[in-house]
Length: 102
Image (cartoon, rainbow, N blue to C red; front, side):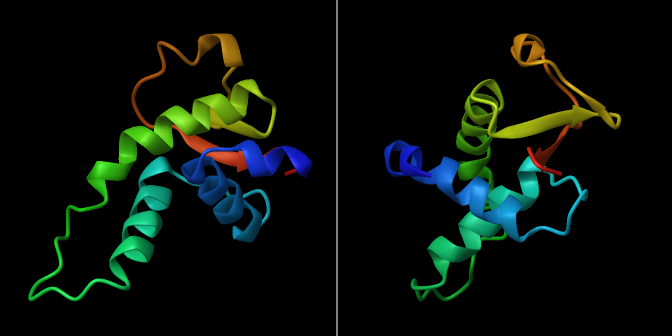
């Protein structure tokens, strides 16, 4: 999409991850944060990788997922049910993302 060039890099990572996910398989924000963290660390050589480095990306993934849901670019589900974009502000607990066309 032409609009993709104006998206946040985290939003682009989310869309790419969902595009490559098996169809109808919801993805957790933690999975995406971990993938982003691993990608960022792939070019960095350290004595011991930080297993919690993904946590620094989690809030950005959550914020961008909510933005994409409000923009109708992905679906957010909780307990298998779609969460309305207007209800995202108070969303807590375990939730997942799916591509819109899934």
